[in-house]
Each structure stands twice: as structure tokens, then as C-alpha cells.
Image 1 (spheres, rainbow, N blue to C red):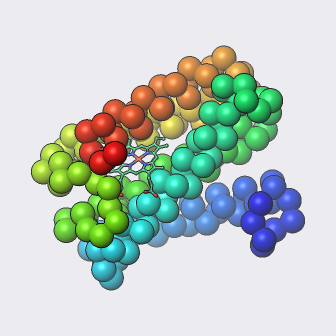
Image 2 (cartoon, helix red, strand yellow):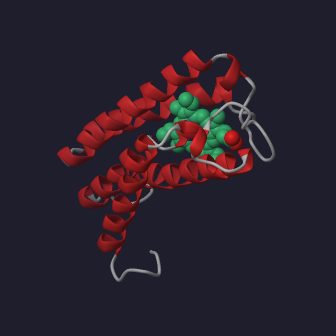
Length: 161
Ligand code: HEC
């Protein structure tokens, strides 16, 4: 839970608002104007992946049964994953494979393949969100597995170990 709010639900709402606001800002700005330094882009995309992964992982724990299934929590987590899923991609501009980045050079030498991988993930996350909203654990399991495949597929091709 974050320190700014009093309940987990409020916290989720706030996160979603922030992420949604960030997403609309990203869409309104030309890619080149977003980051002062290449390192800032690396930091931004890592932060987005970390956030996305944390909330995806909370759904994963329910899918795997390590925590009890809670339909409301799953739906709230899926909302965060959906909002954040659109964010990392604009931070992969030319010349940002620097510093602490674990991105392989293929991100920039095979941009169409990389973009296709991102689109696939965003699409899978849309289905994950729908499954979470359905409140049906079996549907959620399937959608979680399909989404996880898109993470793994891209990491194998484009992320260093
Ligand atoms: C289209 C490609 C692609 C997809 C799809 C993708 N990732 Fe990644 N991911 C990357 C790349 C590239 C990096 C390395 C970024 C860097 O270090 O510059 C990365 C880094 C990460 C990191 C490390 C962040 C850090 O702090 O270093 C996590 C965690 C992560 N991804 C989780 C996920 C999850 C979870 C999914 C699926 C829901 C996912 N990724 C889908 C390409 C992808």
C-alpha cells in the first residue's frame, strides 16, 4: 500500500489514474521530446515493467493458488496491468540501449518484430482484463498463461538474461 492513501482500493484507483494520465500524456507528445537523457528512458521503461510485473504477479499467485482467488483484487490488478502495458514502448527510442539497460541490440535492429511482440502483449492483456472482470478463475488461468507467453517470447528475443 502506498503512503498517500488509506485503503488498498483507493490506492489502486490512484495508481490507475496516474497511469492513465501518463498514458494520455505519452500519446500527446512526440517520442523524442519525452526524455532528456537516454538513461532517463531506461529508468522509465524499467519502472513500467517492474510495476506491470508486480501486478501481473499478484494475479499469477491467485492463478497458481499460492494466494486465495479474490475476484475483486484480480480485477483491480488487471486494470493496473492494462494501464501500464501501453507505457514501456515509447521509451525504446533510438540510442537508448545504454547504461543499466538489459535490452538486446535487436530491439533497434528488428523494430517491426519488437513492435509486433509489444502489440501481442497489449492484446493479451486486454483479454486478461476481460477474464479478470468475468470473475471466472478458469478463464483467468487461460488468459494469464497466454499473456505470460507473450512476456517470455519477447524476453527470449529482446532481453538479456
Ligand atoms: C515486446 C517485448 C517485451 C514484452 C512483450 C515484455 N517485455 Fe519485459 N522487457 C523487455 C525488454 C527489452 C526489457 C529490458 C528493458 C531494459 O532493461 O532496457 C524488459 C524488462 C523487463 C523487466 C525487468 C525490469 C527491470 O527493472 O530491469 C521485467 C520485470 C519485465 N520486463 C516484465 C515483463 C512482463 C511481466 C511482461 C508480460 C506481461 C513483459 N515484461 C513483456 C521486453 C518485453
